[in-house]
Amino acid sequence: MFSSLSSTLAAAASASGAKGDAKKSISPTLRADIYSAVDQAKPWLIGGTVGRQAGDGVAYQPIIARIHEHFPDLKVGLDAARNIEHEVAVIVAGITNMTLEMSKWEGMAGAMAMRTWVDALGDAHGKISNASTGAKGGSRKDQVGRGITRGINQLTDVTLMTREFAARIQIISLLKSVNTKIHGAGSDEARQGEALWSSKFI
Image (tube, rainbow, N blue to C red):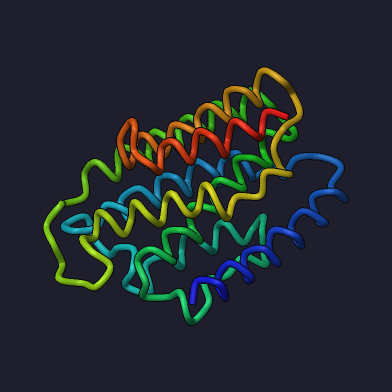
């Protein structure tokens, strides 16, 4: 199931990258759309009493509609809808790619937006109940956490990132910190994320 999702996202990233290469300037709505998407995604990730949530097969649609303004080929396939981990991975990758696209044009502004996004991810995950849902994939908190990690580590298009050195260092450090925020310092996921994102300094 996830291999199909990964293929969809890889194709979307490739297509969006090709479009990005042809752009001569930043989209005038990109900055506002990033912050709006972050505001939409946080309660969607938390779920519970906040309202509709990741995994319900419906609530992701307003968020992905905003992402489509900049990455129109990104989709949540039929095999991913109503699956918490997969929906989260797609949305997290989409917003992260929007932020990286911003950094390509405005390095430090992109780094600031990434800090806002990473803080929102950590805060949202921390507010999710640990209660078991009885689902095969574990608690909702675990499924959201895996989706965040997968979206950041596996589905993000790093070719969109700024080449501006100072901003690039900040962004990579922030993306490395996601794994620690979600899974804890010293966890396998944190170590893997550290190794993965450290390699992106090159």
